[in-house]
Length: 198
Image (cartoon, rainbow, N blue to C red; front, side, top):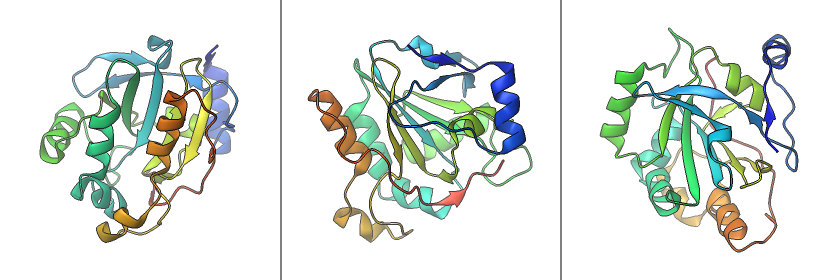
């Protein structure tokens, strides 16, 4: 069962900086608007695996994965009937990487993004509730709404596109294991990238 974020829990997240979201626990529900003005809730996707990808198109680490098409390749591989990929931008207005709907659509067009939706979180409430620290910062939630992975997209913490081919792709591996009905073997890793610009 997906745990709903209340106003109190969002306020607590904002006042303390980050809320605790642990692997094996229900992922907090949320409501965010996408680049086209459509509202999305995590609870809209029962029975589906959901990937949350925190992003900032101006971050060199994000540029690494989009410039090498690593992120789009994984989005395209996994999005469909059983996996929903939600890209989340928590950059505040006036901060690096902040976009409105038109800006988000421009980023999608420029990068060839294949995410299910690009969600706008300028107040940062959802990012703080999940404890998103970097761009990218990745979360994988199973079909029962339980958090199964929290951390980096891969195993080499660099902004060098050349490192991707030698890295373990943690999110891809987690999704493969979940699709096979297996436990995620590496469920928590250290995220790397630019700090989220709350």
